[in-house]
Image (cartoon, rainbow, N blue to C red; front, side, top):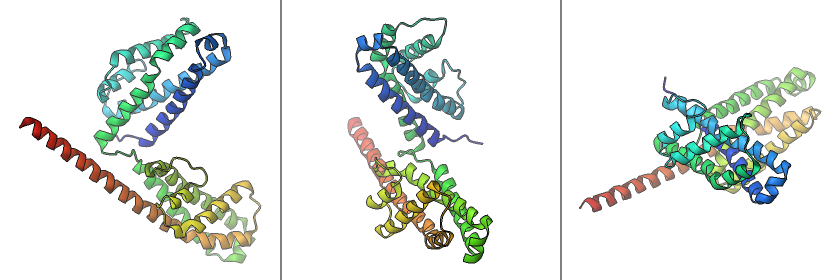
Length: 305
């Protein structure tokens, strides 16, 4: 069975790497003198340095399995770097050697040495991640790094949960209010349906250029033209009900029944709206890549002539 690249693992790891990288940059910007005399800063750097390195190692271990590379903790990054075309393998090896020296309790790395090394070589984290990401994009054709397996799984959760909500509501209002077995299950299935739809939104929003969002992710998709404006009031009600359910389990059951009856049939149409917009985006990306390829082939032909 062919091993597939876990896109979500890569995205999560490199997101953590980016956060650690930004923190390290800020700490180093305080200057060498402050760094050397301030133990608290050194401790923070130690935590971020470890997080950044592990955030590189996690996808490295995964991709080593996918690509059939035999690696260890000390050579994984270099072997994968060679595989993905990372240019400065010598600097990468020196970076790894320093990290393991820094982690070795038998070795002593002075604060001055740590500062100087990171000041000079911190860019390796960013350059390495970029090389890996570009290789994955080019070899898979997944230029937006979309985890289609994740999307399928979450869409299935939405549909299954809506079916279960339909079944629970079919008992009628009086029976629904009378038995906790029904209204408690309805609350749970609704949260699974909404959270799964939200997870789809959270994964795709950056692909559509939505950079800042929180609980309002689905509303941002309406504002961005990904979901039709007619769904804005519905999505606002969905979000409010979700927030109500996580803030209190004590909710008027008749109102809950009515809200679920109103909202349940909108989940799948919203899914279809997102799916349609995603297809249009992918078609646009494919067309752009095809044009780039044709231009590249044309330039090559001109040079040969």
